[in-house]
Length: 286
Image (cartoon, rainbow, N blue to C red; front, side):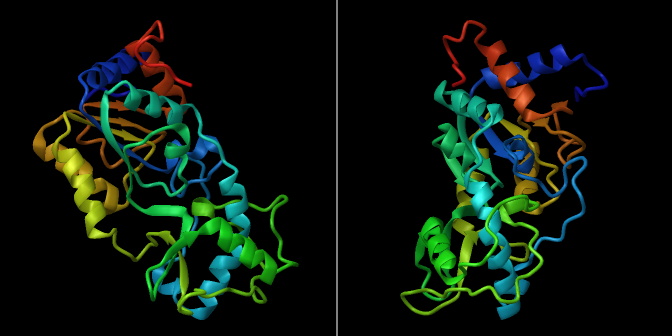
């Protein structure tokens, strides 16, 4: 394995570019890819300890009220986030035909906003809402407007401390009014996989098939603490294909990695794109 301590930064970038140049790359991304867009992560270097809400907490009336009061504020900020150079570099790599698809553990939709098309949202999307009773999906923006009408005095923006996954630190949640499904009266939930839930089997099957047909796996911005993403590293390792890991700080892919770069994705990915096409003719980062 090549690491930041056993090779120069230039050699590491060249090693990553060499793997990508072979094409057939499956990409797996985590929260560290979006931190440079202003979205906090749970486990990155310098991140404060955070206790994410579990599904079991959410389905209680008090837990649901607390979640939506905080997420009402957090979503405003998250929806305004823009793709960073790492997102745009991945979209360019896909456009050049070097990657077969991208599995993201993020729920922010920034890969799609940057132009990536072959995206598997492993943990869902924060910009959708789903009813736990009738399974109807609807727009989060529409639900935001409904919550705003029901809670005209609720804090919305300002200097609120944003937390991961569209959450925010709001102290007073006791009087927040939550709306139920307008079609069946069921409980509404963001269309994301909470801690304590499982990734839907069809989504796992799609991601597994991507890795099964890949020539290499590129892991970006994820410590891989959660099994839902780590399983694909194990799958790639069993197949014996190259694994590249780029992340600030250690990951649970390190023992399997062919190339390991301890650095931010916003710096590494555009530099790798430049190595793949120094004149910008094959891959252009927009």
